[in-house]
Image (tube, rainbow, N blue to C red; front, side, top):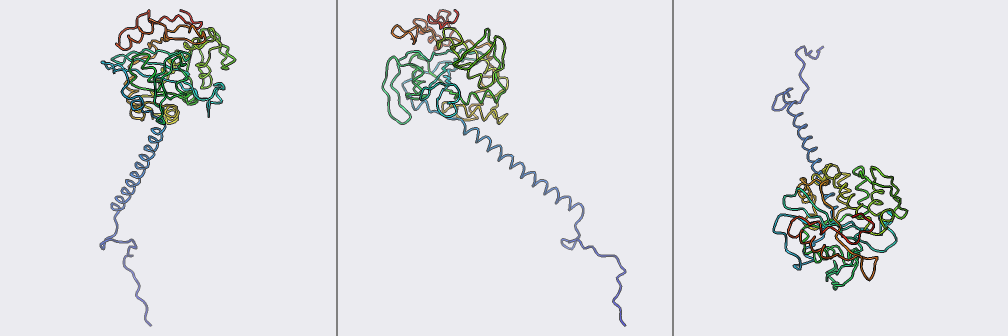
Length: 367
């Protein structure tokens, strides 16, 4: 009887070998680190993809208007200094999301707020000039976005130009009445404005007296308040609760709120770093329409950082000097010679004389 031999020697390893050798702990470690490195690379690439997607999404929010092409060469010369002039419009559409914001029942859209911001050479201070919406102006001949042209017209209410012809014609009109070249154009939509204020946590304002305006819905006691988006819209649109109830009376509130909002934006560095908070950046960029030179996240950030030296609390605010129109007292016209002196100071980047700041039509405002 034959028995199978008994294996009494050392047991053989069942590990898979390479080149006749068993895998060593050191070899296993290398493989593990290779997998870790590969995983890390995947994570980095994925994160980069997400970052690019977020950037592209924000960048695509900003709407651009090719002002240079629309206006052509019929424009004032640029300042010989490095000063900048920016036309800022608050657009008041009665459609879509804006319909629920107490904007009234007028069809189309209006540029309810218009400011020419002049930043002198050095960019450490600025002045903002409000153009009353009810100002009668001569609208120049303009090209519409569809290529058709609109002839020049006299005694046109300033805030109607936006809806009649478009933003490029508003820029052209401001340049014609002022002789000042607008370097940039920035428009913020009312509905987007509301969401932006909510996203940044509100804006703090101080009111010296009670404001009760049934038309806008604003109800504030004298003192300091932090306004949310809806209240902020009511604040900049209020006119029946102050002064004589005219558009001129609310310009002071608009100027005050603009400075308070700019202070909040500067404090949070929203223009210098527009991607720091996606939620805020999303609301900010979605609310903006700019000239084509600013219509990208990178260019907007660069421009924002160039303004970091400006302290909004030192910004001077002026209303374009106006007088009540002799034909229609519900409208105003540029007061002379004050308006001419004001625009000349802006063109020459010089100090604005006090005489150029006085407006015969005060709208119930104090001197």
